Image (tube, rainbow, N blue to C red; front, side, top):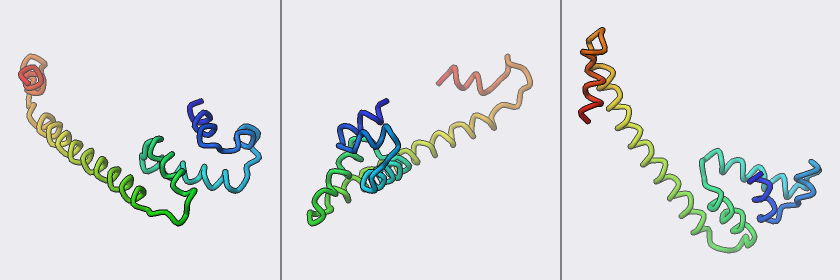
Length: 112
């Protein structure tokens, strides 16, 4: 439902969205939105990217900024995931016991 509301706000042809008779402009916008979502770009940034296309002669500085910020977020997430992977790998390799009472993983988690 949120997507349909977004379409309305972005002035896509709502009749086309609801009846499946799309104008080419609407198809292009929907494909653009889908590609942005595949890159995990947020809806607010997608709206700004859609809006910037209304003036083809304007600077693409905002587009560059949005993409650079998204790249930075993804890189930060990758660093966090790498640390998480290291922590989990250390936990996975620390337990040599076969009984819960001697489980190093549980003891480590309790002390952390």
